[in-house]
Image (cartoon, rainbow, N blue to C red):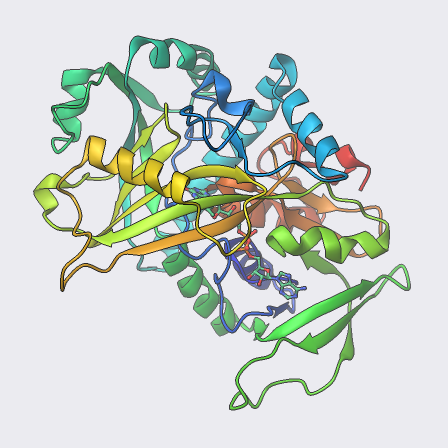
Length: 428
Ligand SMILES: Cc1cc2nc3c(=O)[nH]c(=O)nc-3n(C[C@H](O)[C@H](O)[C@H](O)COP(=O)(O)OP(=O)(O)OC[C@H]3O[C@@H](n4cnc5c(N)ncnc54)[C@H](O)[C@@H]3O)c2cc1C
């Protein structure tokens, strides 16, 4: 397997549980070091709904509009094509089908996350129920089609007036206008990194091998029954005696690529052209100042596309969808939007400075496909499988994707219909 983010590690766990001999190659020194590091913690079924009509639209960094994708520079070469496909996929018929697929996968994942957590007594920060907040009547009106579809699929939610919402989350700022809210029922918040660390330990105990500081340089599907991985050291500290000193090749029955935003370049030499785009998103994590002023679980501000959640003794605020923003560089305008949402809804929740303040501003790359659902399953290249392209909802789809892929690999029927996730839709 390539990649030990939440998707790769959970897949390794499920495959090992199913009796496979699994090796995970990860170029970083441990699990969940890239997109899965300080990610938003939302796993609620229904949270991926198109709450806002301008969700699939483009805007410029200097505009005041805060939903949609922000273009930080002019697209280059094939990026124009990707953006065109991304905009086209927002057309009604296709978007409805794509959302249906994602709701089902998130709900399935939510069930699987809960059963793994309980069966293996995993410890990670988690809570139930979240509120999707509507600032005005227009926000509520734009959410109607999504609510109808969720009702159709039996996804649990309750609609609330502003007063009812404030009773559920008593720390919501009374000064900020609130029209109403939707409560998403069931598991809603979970700590992605903590879960990934715990599930790695469980997988290792079951016999899964993790090779850190090891980069998969290339995949060679030389025969119909085996796959060769060319491996190299990814430059860990000299004390790490497990390091490879030179590139070498190992042979496997199959490879599952879970390399997040880096998957496309790894698959390209095999003739598999994955239309994957890195879209940057941001998070702020800060120590909770006063529990009474903080959310009990989580809220999602639909107008600004920002989630605010309690994670143990910390508050995490996440959001933003930046196209073409340089990786590793924080976007001040996106961070301003996150701070703005936090101050609007929970002004006294966190300690931003001082001796006990431990503020972390972070940016991560979401590996995004133009249409939405991830790529899950076998490709046309023998032995090469995919579990990638989960975009802004990889944590909430990870456990279900891992289980479904394991079932596919064993030739079993999957518990849910996964037609919309097939690699064949991109001729892969
Ligand atoms: C700010 C932010 C907020 C988010 N909020 C939410 C949320 O609330 N809910 C939700 O569901 N999702 C959320 N997401 C999305 C979610 O975090 C991602 O979809 C998910 O973490 C992707 O996991 P992954 O394992 O596919 O990728 P990653 O975690 O990026 O893992 C890929 C791994 O592959 C390794 N790798 C790459 N190439 C190679 C190679 N050649 N050899 C060896 N190793 C390699 C990398 O080092 C990396 O560790 C958010 C994302 C961000 C950035």
